[in-house]
Length: 151
Image 1 (cartoon, rainbow, N blue to C red):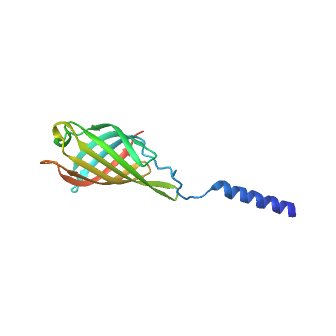
Image 2 (image 1 turned 90 degrees about the vertical axis):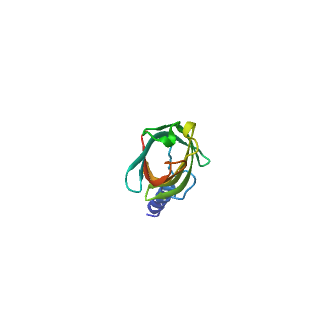
Image 3 (image 1 turned 90 degrees about the horizontal axis):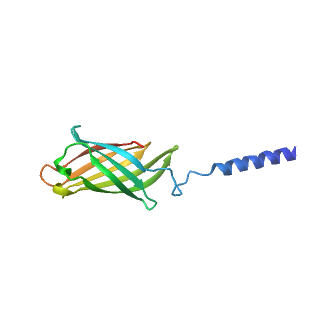
């Protein structure tokens, strides 16, 4: 009986050790890498801008971007723009990973001088949050946005 109890105890210890912990060790599973589609609405719920982009999450907390394409006509981003970003991992809650995401898009070309800032949270492959646009005439505003992970 003593050996059976010892065997069960050892098996239980091995099982608990294999489960690990939920502490954030830098690899929480949050990852924004991939293709995204964004829709921005103003404070009245009117569609303002849509764009697609490719994001790559770097190990230092920055986000590299490429393929930024505005899919709505906007005088604020006639020549497109350059995009930078950052991600702050906030851990897991009941197995759902979340993170804070910041993106800044600066217009280029003939509409240079406009800055679009997005601040949101990643949860379940969707980023939601608020945006603000500061720039020239007609290129100001704010509201909410949703970014959907395409692939």
